[in-house]
Each structure stands twice: as structure tokens, then as C-alpha cells.
Length: 152
Image 1 (cartoon, rainbow, N blue to C red):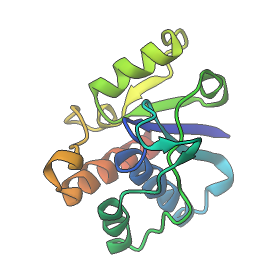
Image 2 (cartoon, rainbow, N blue to C red):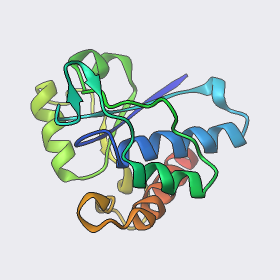
Image 3 (cartoon, one colour):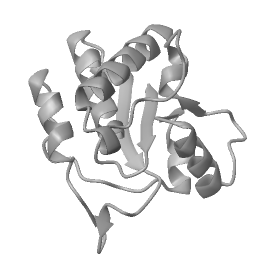
Image 4 (tube, rainbow, N blue to C red):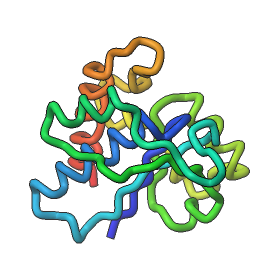
């Protein structure tokens, strides 16, 4: 089984989008038993009194446009146990990578990667928090997940 953890800043936009996009791709291929897929945050900004906020409504709406549900997902923060529990920690951008390294104390096994590094163009997943362009984030994430799945 391949265990993949997507990581972004707050776990309400990009990383849950990636989680549910990849879950849908895997489901369509009938490969659900081959994967464990989840997502988390590097910050606690979207977690209050131990309870995480749900997926940000525009991100949820963008997923719904593509027939993907993220119902029940709530923000959680990355922990040191996650490093042992997952094969890949897939970040959305360079800031996420830096924060993952800070939270975990490094990456001795080389598990931390950026999603767009699986594509031919590289770079960061567009951040819709500042642009409100959830369609562009979806495009980047879909491409990254497709390429990641092809390389596994």
C-alpha cells in the first residue's frame, strides 16, 4: 500500500483538493486498496479548540463542479507521527516544504516532495487563497495528481 499525505498551509483549500482529486482518480481505476490518501496543514490557523475548519466553500464548490465530494473533511495539523505513517508527504509550494522541514526536524528519508515536481513544468500549485482562482488551483492539482499516479 502506498500512503500519501498532501500538505498545505491551512488544510482547507489546496491539500484537501489534492486529497479528494487523487482519491477520485484512484477510485475510477479501481485501485482504492492500493492507497491511503489524506491531507493536513503546517499551521494551526484553521484549527480552533482542537476542531478543524471544514474545506473552504469555494474549494468545495470547485471540487463539486467536477463531481467530487469532500464532505466531512476538517483541517488537521501535520505531526511527527505522520512522517513515519506516510510514504510521501506532498507539498503544494516551497513555503509548505520549508514548514514541513521545520515541524518535522528535516526529511532524512527523502519523503517530502512538491506536487508540481511530478509534472514536466514543476513550480508551485497556484494558491487560490489570494487570487480566488480555484479553477487554476484545480487544474494544477489535477495535473500533478495525474502525473504522480502515473509515476507510482
